Length: 184
Image (cartoon, rainbow, N blue to C red; front, side, top):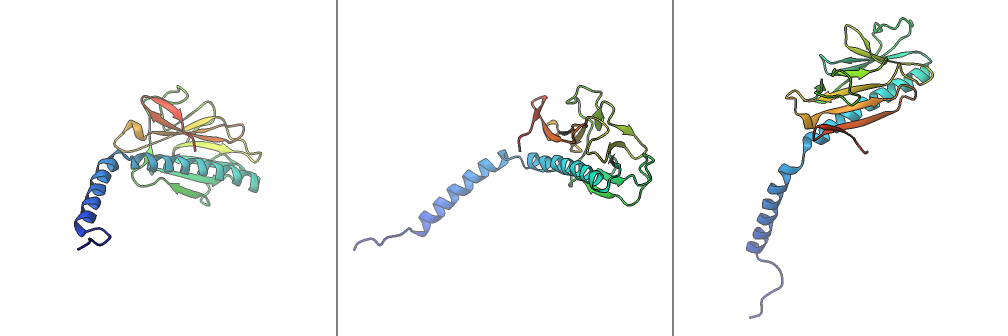
C-alpha cells in the first residue's frame, strides 16, 4: 500500500521541539535591557527637542529640570522670565519603569561625574540640574544627561548629548568601558 503524502504527528512534534530548543538557546542572548535603555535615552532626546520647540513656538525661555529623585524631566515655560522653575503649568516626562538618572563612573565629556554635565549649560536648583532653552532655539550650553538602572549595570548606561548652539541631541551607549555614539 503506497504511503500518503504529508507528515506524521511525530515528525511535526519533533520539528517543533527542535525549534523550541533553538529559541531557548538564542533568547537569553537578546538584551531586552539594551532596547529599554535606548528607549529611555530617546525619551530624554525627544523631551529636549519638545522643550526647544516650545521655546521657539511660544517665544519664551523654557526650563528643563532633571528631577533625578523622581526619575523624571520637568519642562516648564519661564513665563515670568525669572529663570526659576516656579511655574506649575509645566509638563512632566517620567522614565520607564526600572530606569533612573545615573552618575556614571566616567563621562563622555571627561567632566566630574554627575547626573548631568556641561560647561555652562547646567544650573543647579533644589529640584535638580536645569537647562534653559531660549526663543531662538539655542540652549544655555552644551550638556550631557545620563540614564542608567538601579543596580548600576554599566552596559545599561546611556548619555544624551545636547549641543547648546543648535539644540541638536545625540545618544551614546556605554560599551566595554567607553562611550560609543549610537546610530538610529
